Image (cartoon, rainbow, N blue to C red; front, side):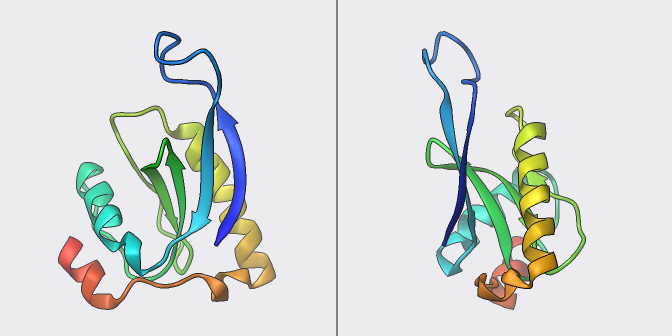
Length: 115
């Protein structure tokens, strides 16, 4: 489920002359492997449950757990502070309206495999 689209500046002006879209969406079962890799990059344990994801150029750069108050998981090799802020704001809104029920939680086995 696509939630929002925002834009950020490219990481370097040589890479592009415009803005890069950020796709913010809820996780589904197909994201388990990518979330596990992101958690490994961030040296974090992947919590079970559903997530709000941010993708830039089709690459997962950050994720915020929707079912817990754990901090975001983000790619430490990219500037993601602004992306994490967007995710946290959107996650707070989803939690306050009860919309997290529509997100697809990761199966517990996927979260355990990532640990």
